[in-house]
Structure formats: structure tokens, C-alpha cells
Length: 119
Image 1 (cartoon, rainbow, N blue to C red):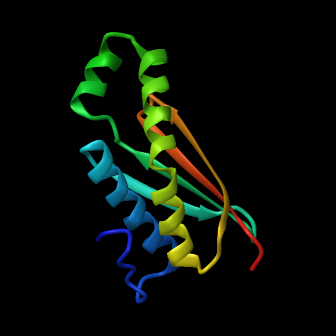
Image 2: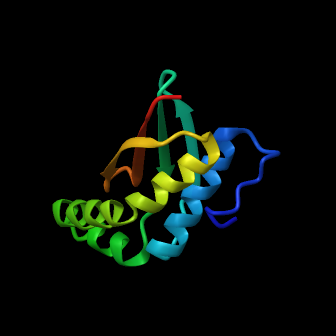
């Protein structure tokens, strides 16, 4: 489901998971195998994305180019930050104050963390 189309029948975290998965699929060329999002207190949401490596990234991973792969991935995650934030804002009805990303190429797990503005 495109991130601008939120299914109001789904719980908030499921909406966010689907939207983030869609952004990854469109922008990186491959969606994650699994996404799970969690509330981290009343004003934060953290999402873990498993199995996000593209074929080229997998090649870099097997060549032990983890530092370069991490740098490239973080650059891409930074570029899609506005779309990720918009998806969370649509699902929660709250502004995203900050969005930070992480990536572990060895475990093939990415993270997206959102600090929400005032309710």
C-alpha cells in the first residue's frame, strides 16, 4: 500500500509498518522481509526492518565491505527520511520531530526511529 494511502482499519503500528515497507520497496528496489514497529513511550516509535539487503548490497556484504555498505545505506535512509516521516504523521496524526536511522549489514537489520511532536 502506498504510504499516502493509510488503511484506517489497521492498528497504527501496522499502518506504519506497511508504509515503511512500501517506501523501502520503491526507493531501494526491495522491501524488507519483516517489519515490526513498537511504541517506545508515549512520544516515540521504533521500527526494525529485517532482510532489506538488495542483491548488490548482499554482494558488498560477502566481500566484507561492511563499512562502505553501511555508509551507502545510511545515505539512502537519510534521503527517504521525509517520506518515512510523512507516513508516520499520517498514521499517528502527530508531527515527527526527529527521525533517525540505523543499519547493521552483518545482521541485515535496519532501524527507523521516530520522536513525535506534542499530541
